[in-house]
Image (cartoon, rainbow, N blue to C red; front, side, top):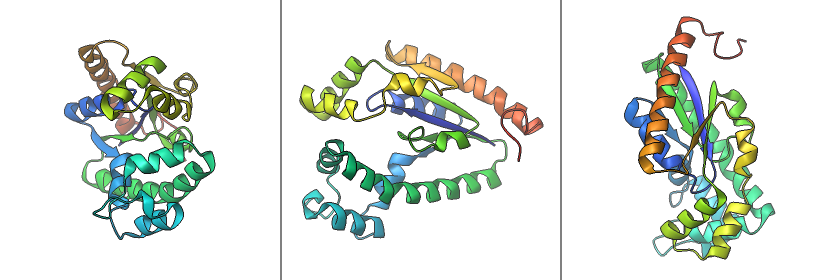
Length: 214
């Protein structure tokens, strides 16, 4: 099994890339979707979120108002750290559970772990390869405004609160740039998948070639 990390900044085009990789045959583990599932109303993580951040983060049906929570944590590094401490161990546990299940059913699988904070948490070191999706800051801001209806100042604050993409590129094994057209992005993602298939076959034949052996 080849384990591949996929990361980037907010509105960098990561979802487009993950969709293509899944279409090409990769298994996808989406950390953001896991987080959404973990904080369904009245789950243990939901209860801790409400205790930590207050009732104001809830919608009328009791679900987490993600925009309100994001506004709180993106403007306050301490609260962002609290959120990460609350969610990341649970996300990691569920990710490992899914990896084991995939490995048992398909030992030759290519598994893509799509997570925004792979580098910040150090989890990327556990991957066979790391893909970083890159867009310009101006594009990130514009995409945030288009899809989220946020003002430019808020979009800039959200982008600025994250690790700069240029820093993430320093540890990337593969880079997919999304500055061009959608079709260019999709084509590059397919190229990367072909390389992943080659690496997966190589690892299956000799597990020590693509990464460190214990």
